Length: 88
Image (cartoon, rainbow, N blue to C red; front, side, top):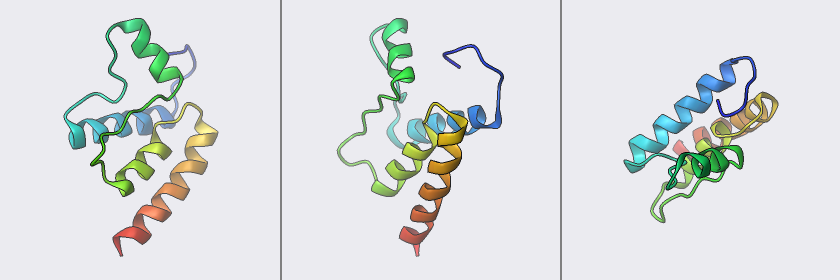
């Protein structure tokens, strides 16, 4: 976590989003030249997707890689619904 706060389940889901991004791209989602810029990218949810990144995966990660638990719950439920519809 980039800011001091109690650990919540949303932090685990955020970590899953980071792992999914890395599995699909082979790169870290918030990679930057130094630690300060990495934290700035995390705090700003600044994710750069490759051009060939699957849209369904992008929607899922946009729901997982958010800063607040409330946003995560809302965005994740929407992303999962859209992702499941796209797979049918």
